[in-house]
Length: 116
Figure 1 (cartoon, one colour):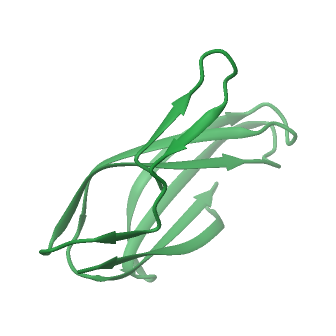
Figure 2 (figure 1 turned 120 degrees about the vertical axis):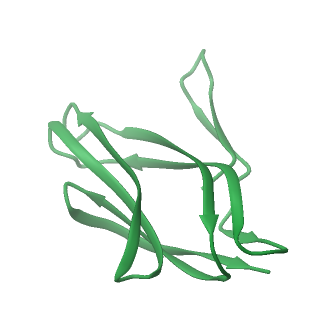
């Protein structure tokens, strides 16, 4: 998670701006106006695929934040996905679970701490 991603037009290199792993708020609900979830995927078979990112206070009750398709040229291909989120609301402080899936298979389970 970061504030933005710059792609150098000459080299194609990605620079992540303002990387963070927690959010602080004075009052709840907290609305985070804009963030980017950048990920690099490897070892993905050739063809079309679907990534889904979900989040919630309870791992059993999560909301879909992002669902998008992408294409892989081969398992050796590195796929950079830039996922923009606007006005993400955190109703209360807590440890929010995050689940990232590719083709309905979990590839990462992590969390973000939201505190006052």
